[in-house]
Image (tube, one colour):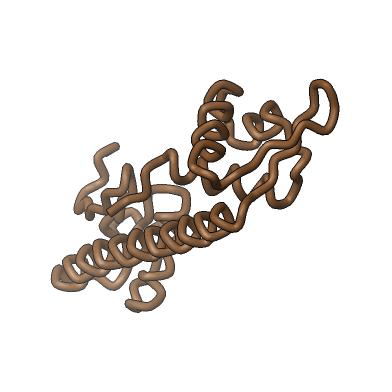
Length: 159
């Protein structure tokens, strides 16, 4: 169960508006890394659903105000986001534990790591918990982390 991307954008928009009611669509688009039209579409939806109100403060300046319903939505979206991240963390940890069990079954107590980012960091922590050393030794199996997949390579594919 993953959160649809529009919910992530809604959450970020609601958080930004809460922090800065004078935020412009251009500044919101910049923070989200999307086009202004995308932000406009999200804001129109949020306004139509009663989560955000718009007030004109100058001829060409708008102020966005989160309604109580909008605050409740932000809380729900935040909880969904946190739950999804924890589920992802648990899934990555389970994959890493299974891979490290294979390593241990083959008589190894160390691995080489291949991969970067948050998922690789979770694997590094799992190695510590499982007492599997991360080494540079060319004879150790390689734990690869790529595209949400964790695998053990028994031979270096570059050799």
